[in-house]
Length: 240
Image: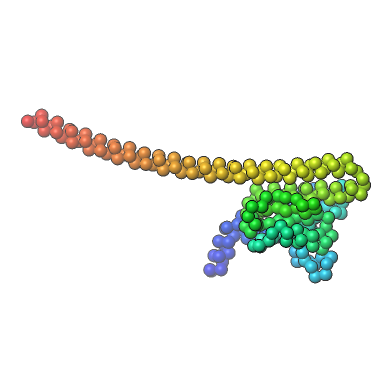
C-alpha cells in the first residue's frame, strides 16, 4: 500500500506521470517529426556504430520529402547533476559518430542544468537546449532545435551542391531563430516577474480589504453599542 501511494504521489507531481526524462523527450521529438514525414527512433538501449556504445538517446531520420532525405539528427538527454557545456559537446560528438548523424541536440533537464545558461544555443552542428519535462511550454525549445537541426542538415548537403545563395539565406534564418529564442526567453522571464508581482499585489490588496472589513464591522458594533447607550440615557432623562 505504501509503495502504491508513493507511486501515485510521484505521478501526481509530474504532468507526464513519471515517464523517464529520455522517454519523455522522445515523445515530444516523435510527435514533431511525424508532422513533417520524418522518422524518430528511441535508441537509448541499442548499441550504435561504435562497438558496445549506446550514446545517443533518440535518432531522427529525415524523410523522402525533405531536401536532405536520409540525413540523421541525434538527441542526447541528461537529467544528471554536474554536466557542463564542455561535457555536453563531447558527448554530442560521440553521439553523432555513434548514430551516423550530421547534427546533434543535447537536452539539459531544467532541474539539473548549470545555473546561468541560456535555454537555447548553437555551436556549429551542436545545439544545446534546456528543457523541463513537466512544463509543456518548454517543448518549444525542442521543436525549434529539431527544425534548426533539419536546416543544418540541408545546409550540409547543399554545400556539396554549391548552392551558396540558398545556403546564405538559410544561415540568416538560423541566426534569426537563435536571436528570437533569446528574446522569447527574456519575455518569459519578464512575464513571470510581472505575474509574481501581480500576485503579491493582489495578496496585499486582499489583506488590506480584509483589515478594512474588520475595522468597519468593529466600528458598526461600537456605533450600535453607543446608540443603545445614548437611547438608554435619553429614556432615563425623560422619566425624570
